[in-house]
Image (tube, rainbow over all chains, first blue to last red; front, side, top):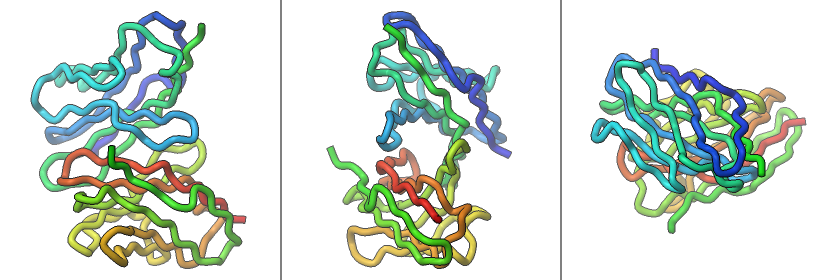
Length: 114
Length: 112
């Protein structure tokens, strides 16, 4: 069965310091992987996606993620946090090959302090 | 930039009543989805819709739920007889192909 585990429910960083949000996936097949962000009272916005091309994926707002098959991980990073990055982040997996449903992780709430 | 829109943003209803949640997907998209997030829980897939029929559904999507694309722009989710446990945030999404799904802002449904 496919699943996604976000290893931290809450992460707190200071503005200007690096961000690391951890995600591990379980999939029998080659997955597509996504990170979505949800700001308060907003919808789910796509940050970036991995679909079996380059293993290092760059997204919006300076975020990037690296697909590591050997570790079944897809961690999200950003070199320098900004106050506006405070939000909830979801790691998401989708099977390839005709399946459409997305499987969400539980989410990581990122707090950014001045 | 085109986006998915949903109405209403918040719906309050009495248990047993029917509700219809509305979505306008991105105009050139062909695949449509509903997900829900019960407070404090994960976002869960409900149903996907393509070519005027359901292509996938979860076990949550029982006979109380239905979806429809009544015209060229709207995509609706109907809950026939709401239960307390249907209280959740409902997200609509759409995609051009079977790849990236774009989400709306959600409708918060409260069943009293």
